[in-house]
Length: 318
Image (cartoon, rainbow, N blue to C red; front, top):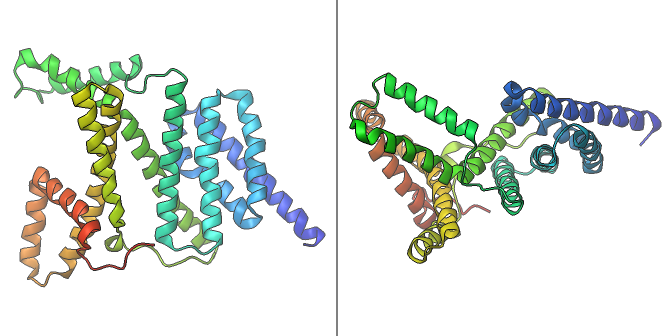
């Protein structure tokens, strides 16, 4: 590497490191920007990997992390550096090594979910109750439910049961909060992946072909997920192991949405392949939209069955 190339690499490293640090501080101190920062924050680290290499990216995260420690609590630093920063490094390495689009998306979502899980575990051992929401969130829920009640949307529920109904909604949210937190992290990672592809297209960077939605699949051994979730839930309920029951229910909650997504992929494939007149297809689509509970059951069943019997006869995922 010549002197000019080293100088350019150092300038690019400093620029993207500064971008990461400024965006992290903005997301922390301006909550209105938090969602956008969460989507975009991995990109500077990814670009450092692509422009320089992973060592520069790790050094940049370390420098930004030291700055964050001055202005933020350790929990926020963990989220910014380990969840978002290292996700950017992972994306950079995968794009740089020409990994397929499906694997990049999968690895990114899995990493984000595991990073969120690690944060929850550390919070639990730090003495935080993961299944109890704060007073501000509870107050927001109560105000929202009161607004629904004032709008007449709870008129079908007897007045004496409306309070217990409201409490059950809050209790369910508290119970499934860890699962929702992990799902949100994985979804944000997926959004970041598509933003990263769009960014690299603008930079004329070589990219593997995009992922076809109808080709999404899971390996057969993914069936162990619902088995473990059901086992923990039943054991916890039968033997009063409250933590085990809560963990099992959160596993099933996460898998419910995963199988909904996979079922949509299978249904879209079948819908495209079936050779029937378009008016009949339109009727089927309207029926599916008009009866969401039935449609969701069908999608979950498709998502559970497809990894076992390979309904679309796809090659097994690597």
